[in-house]
Picture (cartoon, rainbow, N blue to C red):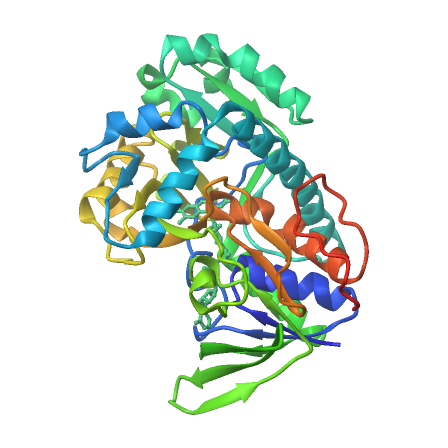
Length: 423
Ligand SMILES: Cc1cc2nc3c(=O)[nH]c(=O)nc-3n(C[C@H](O)[C@H](O)[C@H](O)COP(=O)(O)OP(=O)(O)OC[C@H]3O[C@@H](n4cnc5c(N)ncnc54)[C@H](O)[C@@H]3O)c2cc1C
């Protein structure tokens, strides 16, 4: 059976890998000249199982209101005339209800735990080499109120099979001595020793090489213009190559992994996907003084900023902007990341050589990715991974491959399951 995976980011390439392993013939289509050049290019690098809480939680509306109008707010809502943005916003508010947030947290935790295991198995099986560190993630907290709630938070994580150590400021410094300059900035933390960090872009490129060797075809520089549906099935897709040549391609089944662009090409007869782009920023700087750079990945919980050491580079990423599909950078938000790097780890990186980037997280209101079969008989989804696409990539793809092979996926997660698919 020939499958066409639409999109060659984290979701697309991991899907291609696991589907090939399950015995399918696979072709990946992407508009960029190489894989992982859009949102999977320069993310925060964290495999953050210890952060299963969705953005939509009971505290979110008040926090967003507090930040309204601040150009440096970690989460910025810029209203547009796009009805999809308003629909997304309304659903986001509904997902903030306590019972929904709890249900979403449990589902994310189950998929994230499974996904980290899949990633480790994949590394063992393939010998894949890319910069990564199994040194955990340290989440830092700033207020006495937040620090006094850490024990409760740790026991909630434990109930989700996620280990986290409650740390006072002294213990945070023991775990990450490079934080010495930021000592006044935090009063405690949660340390998730099992978490890791790594370069998602290099991971995808290396995995694509392995997939090619295993027989996966890649059609790159190919912009998908249209998906044709006839009688409840996808019949073909129109693509335009980078030299302007157009052609129609067909397969037995299709997997949609187009990130934030996933809803835009869907035929009307398919379901409407509640995915909207949430823009985020990162800077990447070469490490200039290793003794001042963190070796543990760090999350600043209040400011929603993460720091990861990726080989000889330091990545700082964060902020969320809901303002449509524009990837125009806002220099103030990029500068804020440089300022945080200087404040936390002064002298660690060559900031004059910083590479600036922004990408569009394919976010659903619930934070849950959409994985499984669509209403159309031969169209499948693996998309909408929002802020956790690296963390959830391998587990989502392995689960999709299980479902497409007629097996039950392992994690307890609300996959889109329909019984009438015959592989
Ligand atoms: C600032 C920032 C920090 C982040 N930090 C983390 C983190 O620390 N940990 C974590 O787990 N996640 C993180 N994420 C989230 C993660 O990066 C994303 O969830 C993930 O990259 C999404 O992968 P994807 O494959 O769904 O989308 P993409 O990587 O965007 O892939 C979609 C692909 O589809 C292709 N495409 C789109 N339209 C077309 C078309 N018409 N024709 C052909 N091809 C098309 C694109 O070229 C692209 O390659 C972060 C995101 C951002 C923005």
